[in-house]
Length: 154
Image (cartoon, rainbow, N blue to C red):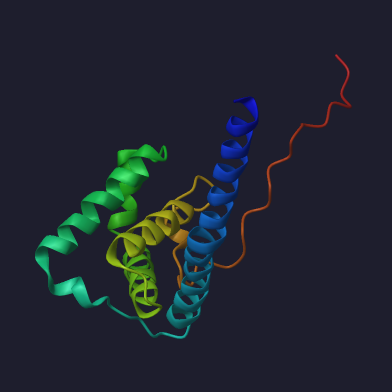
C-alpha cells in the first residue's frame, strides 16, 4: 500500500510540473513579452487599447478587479487613487492588457497581467511617477541597504 501511495505522489508531482511547464510558464513568458512590448510602444508614443475597452461591463470589471488586487497586495487606497489619476499609469496598464490580448491571452489573463504590472508600478519605491512611458521613469530606485553602517560608537 505504501508503494502505491508513493507512486501516486510521484505521479501527482510530475503532473504538477507538466502543468507548470505547459500552462504557467507560457503564460508568464507571454506576460513578460507583453510588458516589454507595451513599455517599448508607450516610450515610442504608441498606445494600444484592448478590444473590450468599449464594453462597459468588462471595463468596470477590469477596474474593480485591478483595485481589489492592489488592495490585497498591500497598496493603500490613497496610493491607488493617486495612481488611477495618473495618465501614464492608466495608459501603461491598459496598453499592457492590449498587448496581452494581441498575444492571444484571454481576458482573465489580461486582467492578471495588468494587475501584476500595476502592482509593480505603484510599489513603494516607484509610485505613479514611474508608470510605463512616463518621462519621469528613468532608472529603478537603488536597492535599500540591508544593514545600516554601524561604525559609530556610542
